[in-house]
Length: 517
Image 1 (cartoon, rainbow, N blue to C red):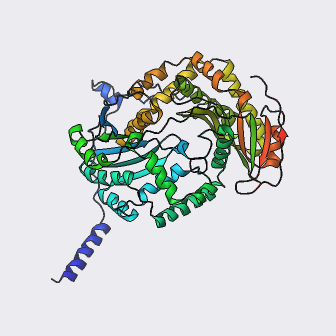
Image 2 (cartoon, helix red, strand yellow; image 1 turned 60 degrees about the vertical axis):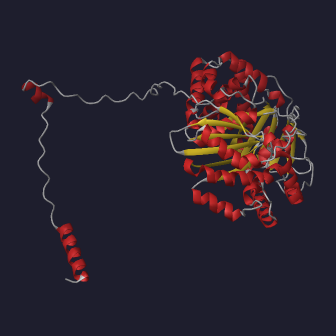
Image 3 (cartoon, rainbow, N blue to C red; image 1 turned 180 degrees about the vertical axis):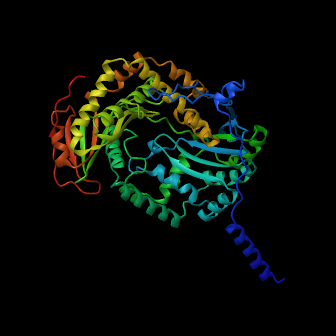
């Protein structure tokens, strides 16, 4: 039989099988009813299931514990500090290099230089092009990324444990030897131009930038991490090279390694790669300086916007403050999620917003207490009044016991997810370095949160939620929003044109003077 005939015959057989009636299923023995069982002397079967009680949420089980393996502190021959956390559940290793080269290190004339420098690290070294770096990392099935925040820059990567030696060679080359190739530099500059242009039409980012400059003033935190269009155009290759040479040094850095690797394996790998890095000098501490924190309102024009974006900030606390845990619980009560007061009052009861959040923007050298979210433009004034009312209530009343426990449970039960992967563990250990926190911080975190009292929350609110010290930024339609601000204790109101549009007039106005809570 030819092959074609065999195929046709098989197809016909399959078609016939599909068309043929299926045989009836075998008869199943019927279960005896409960009455029949009793008549036969058997115990009755289970009755119908009781309907669940939907009048109350199900009881919570015990909170999972977070206990990290011990951190081992190593030091390479060039002085680079290393923290190793052995985690052998999966054959994966994560690297996270923390460098004191955040945007707070930007020179005054070039805001955004730290971010631009980090963005160029993976764009070519003295021996590897950007394409080669990408190909090598992809061939390993690894990851490699760099970025910047206000307090630190980072270089992170991850791979299977067996590929760690190869990943470290690329990782070290990128950290130590960026070449800032002119063609790649201009390509990245173009990408950042596009990002800055796109941000002009994103109210949360517009508000954040206006708030940053107004609230922090001349502080090292007083500019956006990405910088400005003017600084981007003024930045030259030599500026990037000088910044890297000054700050990206072992004396200014610490490496976190988490995963399936032992110290005796890791140390020689690091010496052969990052051990060749020249030590450099430790950068001086960021100066501790109070933010400007003016009591004022900035209204950025967004004509015909159906919503107004609200960003209200008050002087806050640094990340190492003893008040941080009490503040975390306070913000969870105020605006931490769907059970928070702002969500229930402004969304569920009033219908002003889809959601309003609150939190601590706590940094190494200072911080802000922040409330943010979008509200319907025609109720902006009412929403701000309700927001200030909730702030005042936290300052004068103790949080009820049930609400306090819910807030603490929300924080504690969210913690294990942050440590579910080696990358997550590495990131959390890196935060200890960036903010100068003790090794056992995360081990004791849940217990410390559980000990926060209603009195702690009220005292923290009195200290860090002061309506008389608000710096408010609104992004919306001035014709609709501005008249609603009359009578609110928001300080002087300044109307600004949209980003990228030069101001054509000054339009100062005054809101009501600050009132006590």
